[in-house]
Image (cartoon, rainbow, N blue to C red; front, side, top):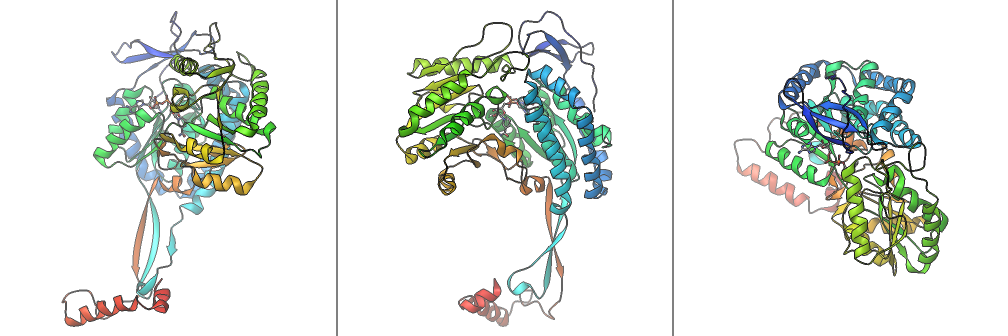
Length: 523
Ligand code: NAD
């Protein structure tokens, strides 16, 4: 891990991260400021492309020895990180809270609890999911060949992550890549570098060798240098715009990449929903983590016949959400760019005909607080319905019926996740089948990311590939089929020389496919 000092800078204007100055060596330095007070909380020296190359070279050198350990051995080491996290949870939470201003309940509940669960789950599952195995062959090859599948690590994996859940969103892909036998170089967001850095720290303290998991510091320039370096896969979580840039850099080199991008998740409230739960869910799932969650509920479609009652409940519940420093329900937005974007979306909604029933404004004062907000009368001509807002806004649209709700929910360039509130499980599944989203949750929403066995990943502009589920873990290996000889015929009927018999045999085989019984035998 490149451990650089955190310098405290004086007298900066409120901003969460901005180019500050140059280091003595001429490198770039970024200043960090608290989203709660606006005061300086440190600075980060940016790793340039030469440093990125050095770190990746060390990672490559360390990879064969790491891969030579069994999956079980790697799992034991990684599981040990749970004890480290448990012992150091107060410090980790403190770092996360200093950089983001999250309430303690969110530092623990959104970051540290799921991190322990992911470590536990993946380190228990990996042996089974990465075990070489034999797979039954179909058809006429069966007497002659055996198929074995074995999993080879890819090499060095680059992981690039955002600021909204900086600890857990970094830890989850890093742990999977390590279990699969890769070494990892990761770059947390420049907005939350020290929260991300804890991932390397807890793994090192658990006994993972230093060069097996290394952290880089810096912004997009460092991230781009990592993508351009001699790595074998990129796992990126962040915005659509950056994801597109990374995808095109990877395409040039045929570098595999997993892209977990933004969302504009819709919640559908059916006429038979438990309206108390739906309203509580609408408020919490739009506003927890100050709405800065890729799977936040960003659009709510409620069936007209229950809309009045639902909206009354949402207004009552949203009005009771406390917002401010300390342990209020809701913390600040994590950086000034985000606060400005949320304010723009709300202003655009108001200017184009929406009604703000609760909140709607930046909270005056030092921190980057935005009032818990409820908007009704929204429509698809508004930015707040079309673009990712990433703020504490419950935006409600009335719809005639479920068909209209589904049509509007699908009318988005995003397709990350979605939710359906109904008392009828079969209805939930029917609606889910018509939604063009990566996942759907019944009577809940963002919890899906915390279900490691669920193959979570976006559709449309929300991404490519999965970050959870067995496909995610196996995304860090090459599945190598090895075809082993069982029995050799005296003469391979398709090998040289081609004769009339070759043609007759092949022709006979094609004709045999015309027979239903033989088809079944060959399947
Ligand atoms: P971002 O794209 O600005 O930055 C993400 C990371 O990429 C940061 O570490 C940044 O330094 C780095 N980066 C920036 N430019 C780069 C480049 N050209 N090459 C390589 N790396 C580069 O995103 P953000 O603002 O940090 O995060 C918010 C976004 O992340 C939202 O859109 C949110 O929906 C999305 N997100 C998605 C998920 C998910 O699982 N789908 C989870 C959390 C956040």
